[in-house]
Length: 116
Image 1 (tube, one colour):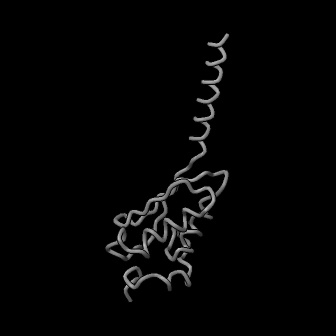
Image 2 (image 1 turned 120 degrees about the vertical axis):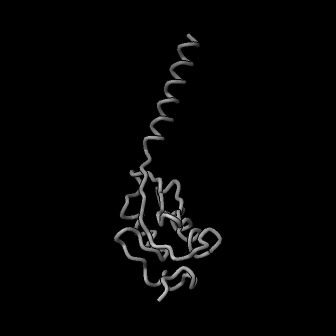
């Protein structure tokens, strides 16, 4: 009887674990990063990742300055790609077809802005 009980508990926990993994989607967003030292710069990567860290449903984000992409893993039950793009735009960077917020862009370091 104990063996059956433990098998049922194990299967239930395995099912819950699998269900948690299934609650994730990945979004790759194109952006424009003009800084050549993005990882060290306080305006680029940390600003974007901090904005995403406080976005409900976002589990992980990574900025790739070379490819000019932002990879976001998120829970689709809590957020959606449009909200993620808006969060990135609110950090001062373009996100696919969503343009950067003008106020946030003006607060970026000079190295992070497009040379005019």
